[in-house]
Image (tube, rainbow, N blue to C red; front, side, top):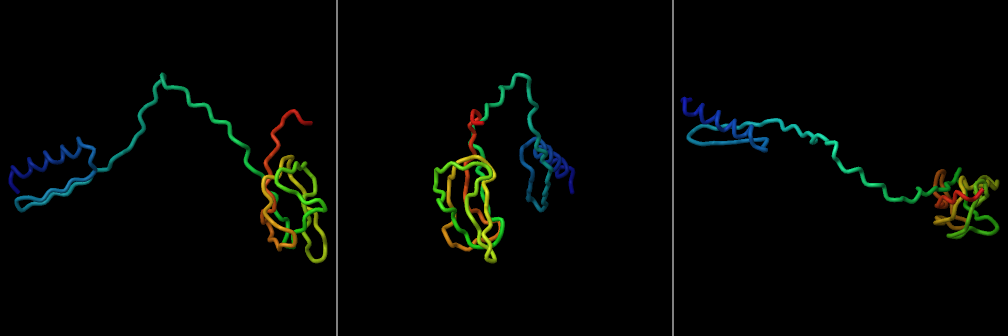
Length: 142
């Protein structure tokens, strides 16, 4: 390799180092150069004059799912729950019939029924969602 070729290679490597590119490949006059460099991504330093973070938008509380505690057949309570009905923590929301026994399913929170997911007599699996409840966020209620 001639002195001109080495100078040319050094020049190309300096150009690669100064650019945003991470790879360079050149082939000419019977020689070939392929060079790669590792690009490190850094975050710009924060300044003391940054704007304060935006206030989080009010969000709705996550829904609570009332799930089947065992495998069996779903049966609504005598007065079936419908979307919009208010339920209280500990209130029986339905029954699961398993091996001839009726097992009560209670609501874990105070809230409002947002969705009824099963119908009377349907076979349900352990952990299967039965109701979706929107949590009552009214702090004034005792």
